[in-house]
Length: 113
Length: 110
Image (cartoon, rainbow over all chains, first blue to last red; front, side, top):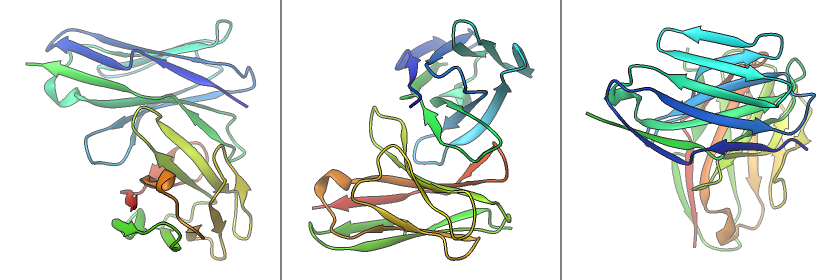
C-alpha cells in the first residue's frame, strides 16, 4: 500500500515568518494530495489540495507544490499568524474511486507572537 | 445542514465490552470512512464504504466491524474492546475527493 512520510513533526516559527512542511509518498498511482489543519480538540479540516496534473496551487497565504518525479509535495504558509498554530496533516489518495486516503503523521506548528 | 455528526462524543469501556459508534451525514455523500487517531501516528483508516450496502477494509481493520445499511449512516462496532483500542475515532464522508470530518468520539478502554 501507499506510505506517506511527513516532516518535521514539530515546527516553531516567529509570527510573520514562513513555514514549510514536506511530505513524500511511495505509490506513483496516487494522484490527489490534500492538506488538513487540525486545531486542538477539533476535527481535521481541508485547507488546500492539489492534483497530479498541477505543479503548484495557491490560496492567499497558503500554497502547495507537487513534484511527481520525486514523489514529494510541500505546504507553504507565508506571513504566519498565531491562528495558524495547529497540527497539519498531508495525505495521498487515488481519487475518483472513494479509495483509501493515507495520512502523514502530522506536523505541530507553533507560531510565536 | 448538520454535516457529519458522531455519537457518542465520549465513552469509557471495560475490556471485553462491546459498543457501536454512529456516524451520520446529511450531504448525500456516497463515500464514508472511519479513522482512528493516536498521538504521533496521524489518521489511520479502519474501514470505508463506497456506497450503501458496501464496506471495505482499510489499514487497521482488526477488532472492528462496520455496516452501511443506509446511505446516510456508517456504524463502527467493537465486539470485544481492548485497551489498544483507546483512541479518538473520526468519521468522514465525501462526494468525491474532499473529505468532511465529524467532531470525533473519544474512547477509553480500561
